[in-house]
Length: 628
Image (cartoon, rainbow, N blue to C red; front, side, top):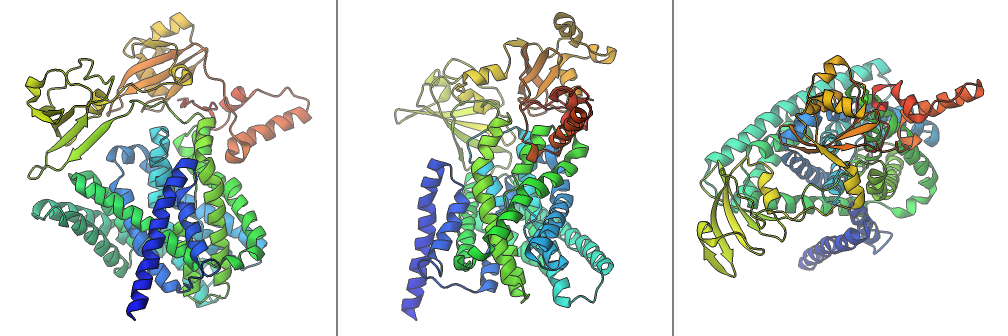
């Protein structure tokens, strides 16, 4: 018995260490890291090194706990500003988008696999949601800056659509288990009522539980080492409570993380613990699910699964995203990128265990097909997301260069934080820029000697400066201690050749460059004109084409106020969006073919985009233009 325990511990920790070690290789070659974790589990399983793990309930239990931890951290790391900016489109994608994707893929599965309609819809629901772990990893650790609105939409969608997919999956499993006595109307009614119950209870408990986590953490004088464990335990307790109450535990922990992350004045230790436990949860979940799979059963299903993966990536997901984002006037390039960042991952494999646990006749078939679709998604989409972002012009130049910042725990203060900056070469503070009054420098460590900031003189490269700041300090302080951003020639061109004052009247710019504006637009400032053309809100790197010129937002503060604008007299040429990612592009192409056959002169891509739906107004890769 003792030998068995030691062997299990040895093998388990060995797999975790192997996964952590291979992350170095994955980072170096740009491989999807979570795919690597999955492959390690496959290689170690029954068809590889011989570890025989075939316990679906245990795998589902471990995976559910890991997913709850990941979703809590997903909400914990979502800023309130991102929520305000992207909540509406993300919520539509995570509800209606999941339904549309599940329905389209389910219909295809019915015909390709020869299974019943309900089983096809079940497979669609299993694969219906994007994977939070995969999306967060690629977007947050890919070291590529993508426009804030697109990034926020994708992160919130991936974190909030799991509850919908889980609810659909469990409901359809119950319907299939109960037999075919219930008609389609009864099943639809059951789904609607169950949705209201699960999401309603989950939302109420999640918001209330997040508030309670914040209040208890602030009031109880816990040891620093216990505080992260206390928060994690409360989140998992909330997960179990919501499930017992008939609600969605996954939605509850996500919302609780969202509330806690934006209200809790998190010490550095809490953030580090959250990062570490989330990494461990991702590794364990992917390893366990990889161990459970049986690769020898895959070849017979490889072609059908590949066909379904292609339908998912090139038809179901793009169509669902296009329809969901139409009311929000997303430019074509942003719609196309959102369509492609629909990675499937551990959540889909976890849900694929439910037919096996329920004893469905085609349970193993559904699991194997879902597993193969996830593998194709991680391999194809995971490896091409960043190149596609560059092609579509969604990668924006960095605002600041390298920054060395450390958050230091400050007991007894809920309104201030202590930050430690290491002064780097060419930073503004080295060049003499003063630190704002709301920041209070307390100490400078230079050459292993501590000195008062006022007596230390101008900061020198290599100094460590300790500063007390308000808990809601703006990004300005980071910029003061960062080196200059290394901009390539393309980056310089990105922001235009000239800088203009955003508070100058738009009429002056229109007269100089012969830009046609309405009388209402001529009365606006340049900044207000940009915001009006963008629908009321502007962000860093947004672009507005005005005839022969293009205005580019060079800087915008936390409140969306435009502080610097670039002007380009050579607007960027529209970059074609891949037709398979944009139904607007497909519509334009078909219309052009019809005109050719009818003998009419085809319109060019720019003019074609202008007289179609709103998301086609910004046909260029780097355009954020939306016409009012």
